Length: 300
Image (cartoon, rainbow, N blue to C red):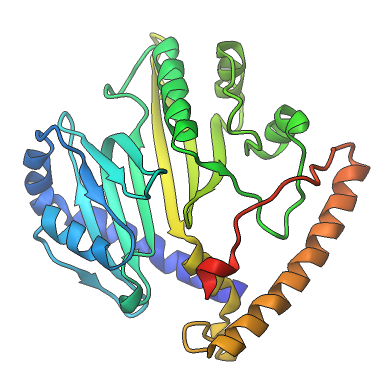
């Protein structure tokens, strides 16, 4: 399964590049619409098909492994979108690219990739970039997005947030916003220059990566924010599937699906126990009170 995922990811990267090269004729459609003050409303599921069709008339790019729908914005008319997710809906500013992906037509949009600027301007002063980061994380926290720790990963305590982040680049306490001094230190590191989050809310997962991509001689900085959304249903069913052994979670009976899920849970629990023993040996504290989402309710 891992070899298949590596092969598929390589194909997906190629397709992304192909789409970016081929989307220029459609840019004016979404670029002109960007003048509208209302954000583009984007849903997951079957409604997502209708949303993309409403905002972009270029149609669907079908491939054997998936179908793709895109929105493209060009400076200075960057877009604003709203990921519809109930009380945890999230507005994203300064968007220049959105890709909606469906691996199973009956499921609708299952994955959504968003590339955006941290600020409206391409290059900003360090304090402007920091303030935009603060505003973004306040918006994310207010929308109720919480830390997601995969079932096989150690539940590192929030007290070790900074130490864990400096080693792995992922934040385990999204409610804690870095100070300006901490922000400057992170963005001045030789390697990295980014902050990563793995969050969940109402059946969705999102990876948020805030990266510094360039710094000018006069001290201005350029940033990109990448959002990788997917449904928990897709994430978990994909993990239950194994194309090399002809195992497809989408064709299982409910009984087969339940059994496969429970077997996976048992395996991941053992992996977590091993990972936490290693973490403790390295001096990390474990948050035994951490409770993630009820995965089965989205899988079934």
